Length: 187
Image (cartoon, rainbow, N blue to C red; front, side, top):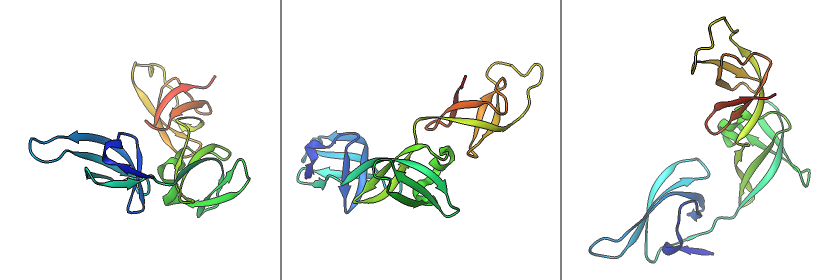
């Protein structure tokens, strides 16, 4: 289905030259002379690059064939990340480049959202909040509880986050994967 200039808005998914994009910024411009146009910043689903694109009155773009599936992360075999569709039990393998930075939040068995474009996996999203165990952090010392100060902690997936001094090695914490910040200690 073709999408015209008047239908463009922030968050809309479009396809240009076979590449799926998401509109991240959108501005309708009506100059004093000439026809109105839309200036948009669009982010590629394939490589994450953000580009500027101008759409004029007759321009059309396609709606991308995007499907999001919930899949379970099974393991990393050294070269590839293995995932399983929780409905069909079908397995797929994705490279380190395809998974990207979200790998540092994935434990075996976690459910993730995988985005497919024309049947090919293009990105992996982890839940916004994950629970992970602290495997290494500095010990506490008397007087370390000054407000606002934090210490680094290595989590079981290898990710490093800043945590408050009262949190100890071996405890499980909740982490916001978008901001990469400590949320709270799991009780």
